[in-house]
Image (cartoon, rainbow, N blue to C red; front, side):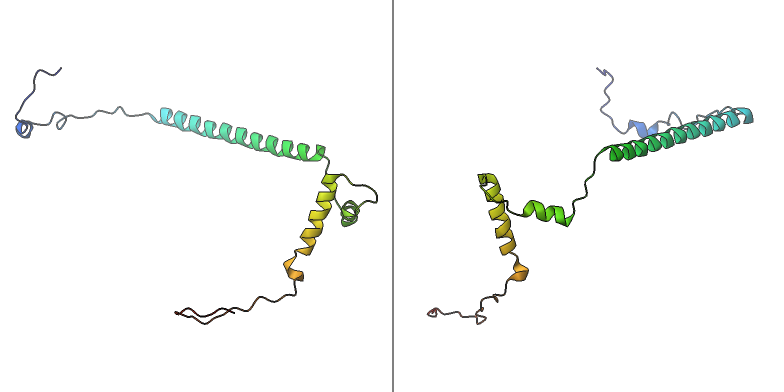
Length: 132
């Protein structure tokens, strides 16, 4: 522990700062050393750029190879109609439910609905009025 605890906290005002008169000495850097350091930095940037470019090229090639190897099937509307048509004969419960839901979906299309919106009572009333 610190045994030199001073209660007088204003004592530092009369003391001189320690580092005020300190002179920093820097050795002059020769031009050869500066050139070597700048060349090292330049070489590091070139190496990092080359590695980054190689990684990007490898990534793009992997994407192209993966997309070329995976089979892509173009579904035409004729094929889709063949799938949607209900087959003749007995259906299992899952297919029957799928066909029922697809029919419900077609029937629920709001763009084909011809029924107008119900009339809205636009009068504002504060008292209770018999509703008919």
